[in-house]
Amino acid sequence: MNLNYNSNELMLVANNESITLSDLYKGQPVYVYNLEGIKERYEAFKNSFNGKVDIHYAVKANTHRDILSTLAQLGAGADVVSIGEIEQCLEAGFLPETIVYSGVGKSKMEIEKAVKLGIKEINVEGPQELERISEITKRLNKPAHVSLRMNPDVCPDTHPYIRTGFRENKFGMDESFLPELIKTLKSNPLLVLKGLSIHIGSQILETKSYCEAVKKMWPVFEKLKSEGFQLETFNVGGGFGIQYETQEYKKDFQLMQEFGQAMLDVFKDQNLKILCEPGRMLVGPEGILLCEVEYIKSTPYKNFAIVNTGMHHLIRPALYQSFHKILATQQNLDREEVLYDIVGPICESSDVIGTERTMRELKQGDLLAILDTGAYGATMQSRYNSQVHVLEVVI
Image (cartoon, rainbow, N blue to C red; front, side):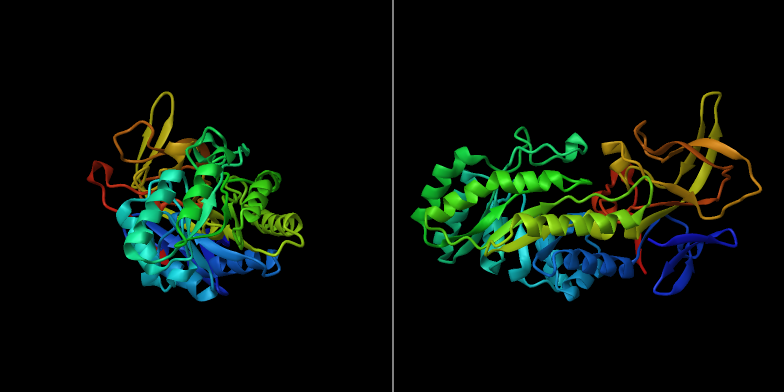
C-alpha cells in the first residue's frame, strides 16, 4: 500500500488521490483495503507466467465481498477450504467451474454440495476422502473432478505452524497411498482424476522449495498417466510471502516474476495447465488496521501503549510471533522518541501487537496504523471476551 506523510499526516495514495487515514477512523478499529493495489498485484502475478496459469485466489486470506467480486471480474478462480467460502464466492460472482476445493476435513454435506455444484476440482487429502467422494457420486449419479494432493516432504524456511508440505504435517499424501487411490479411481468412472496438487507452506520468500517439490512429485504424475489417467493440471499451491518488516514491495513483484519463470522452466514442453493459489501476496500489503491509543502505562520495566484492537482482530503476532510495522497517523516530530510495547485489551498476556517499538511519544487518542494486514487479519478474528468484530472499509 502506498503510504506517506504529508504535512505530518499519514496519507494513503490510491487511484491518483490522497486520502488522510485519520478521516477513515470512526471511533473503533477499522481495516482499510486498497482495491487498486490488489488489481495491480493480480495482473503482475498473471503476467509473470506469460498468462499460462490459472490463478485461484486463496479465499481464506481475505473474504471481503468487494475483494472477492473484484478478483472474479478480473478472471481469477478461487481456492476454498469450506462450504462457507464456496457460498461466499458464488455470491461474489465466481462460477462453480472456477472453484478449487481444498482442505483436510471435508464433511459429507460439504462434498455433496461441491459435487452437485460441479466445481472445478476437489483436492483429495487421503484415501478415505476419495472413497467418500466416490460413494457420493454414485448416490447422486453425478461425476466429480478430483485432484490428488501429494505431500512432497519439502521443508521450506518459514514458521513451523505454516509449513504444509513436510512429511510430519497433516496435509496431503505420499507415494505409499497410490495403490489404494488408483484402485478407488478405477472402480468408479464417475471419479474423474484431473491432476496433482501440492502446497508446501506459507510466507515463503524463495522459489527453490517450490521447484524441488514439483520435481519430487513429477514421477507420481507420470505414474498416474501410465495407469491410463488423462491428467490435465498441476496445482503448485500458494504461500508466497511478503515484506512485513521492510515494506520493500518491489521485492514482492520480483518474487512473482522469479516464481512464474521458475514454474515455466520446470514445466517446459509439458502439455498441461499450471494452477496456482496466491492469497497473502495479492492482498496482504494492501490492507492496514487503524486503531486508537486508549491508555499509556509506564512501569519501571516497560512503557505500554494500550490500544482498542488486539489478538481478537489480528491474531498473527500472538499465534506466529509475526511482525507488523506500526506507524502513528501523525508524525509528531516535536515529541521525544520512546520505546513501547503495543498491546490490546484482551485478558491474555499474549495479546501483544508489537514489542519494543521506538515511536514518537504516544498519548491517549493518538491513532496508529498497523501495516500489511490485508491477509489473515479479519478472516481470523474472534469474539473472545465478547469483543465486537472489526469494521472493514474498501478504497
